[in-house]
Image (cartoon, rainbow, N blue to C red):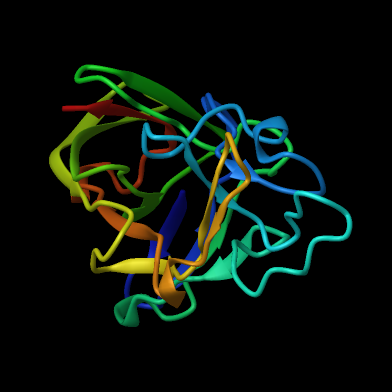
Length: 207
C-alpha cells in the first residue's frame, strides 16, 4: 500500500505492512517453485516469479519477472513516480482471498494520515470485487465498496506488466507474451473529514 500525503504536490510515502499477508505467491531463488511459494495466484497452480527464479542452478537467467528487490514505479500515467515496494519474496507477501466473504486485515507498521491510498492488487481466473474498510487510530472507519479487480491478464490501469508466471507443480515458465500477467493500481480516496486522522489498518473483503 502507498499513501499519498498531499495530492497537489504528488508526495508519496510507502506504508509498510506489519501483519496480514497470508501467502507467498512469488517464486524466487534456485529450486522448485513449489518450495518457494505457499500458494498460486489463480486457483489453477500458477504463481508470480522473481527475475532471480531458476528451477536449476544451470537454468538460463529470466528476461521477465518481478524486480529482484521488489521495488518499482507505477506505469499509470496520472501518478508518475508512485513507488511500490513488495514484501519479501521469502515470506508471505500477499493477502490471498478465495471465497466470497473471505477477508483479511492489513495492519500498518506506523499509522499515517493521507488523502489517498494506493493498493496493488490483481485477480486470478477472472475478475473479482472487493470492499475495503479503512480503520483509523480513533477507531472510526471508512468503507469503500464495490472495487473491481481485473483478471491478471489484459486488464487496464496496471502498475506493472509483462512479469510472467510459473506453474508450481512443474516449474513450467510462461512469459505472458511480454505484456502479462499484470498487477493493478487501485486508488482509495480518503474522505475529507478523515484526512487528518491516522490510518491504522485496512480490511479487504472479497464480495
